[in-house]
Image (cartoon, rainbow, N blue to C red; front, top):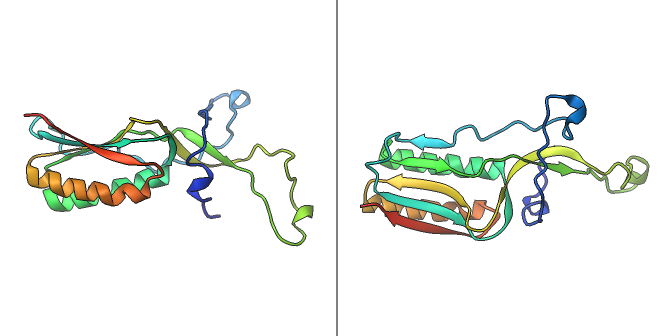
Length: 175
């Protein structure tokens, strides 16, 4: 089944739903969706030579689904790798841990006989998200020179529509 629209979850105020236990009776969550994002640090290991740092920072509360994080990661990593040949450092800060639930509802003729409505409406685990607050760092990119900063700003502006919250780019020169 397809994923539910992100606006069903993205702006809601929420407490973390993460109780996972190896003891089955103590776990609130019986099945946890698999993690999609596996790499959080990419590029060059020696960051000390990269003096220009760009950080994408959140401006509001949101739930950032792992699908959005992975699509941004792939786009940024591909663009940076093609342009700079491993002369950059890229880090993802939010870690998806919050399990999102969905109470599936049927619509149409005869649907009232096939579902329980609001009885047992706790929902089934559907996806994993990271809970983002204002001023949280989302992505950090370190690059070697000014030309790279211009390209990196352009590529960061292209991923902004993929994210459920308003963001800004902070720049720092360590010289």
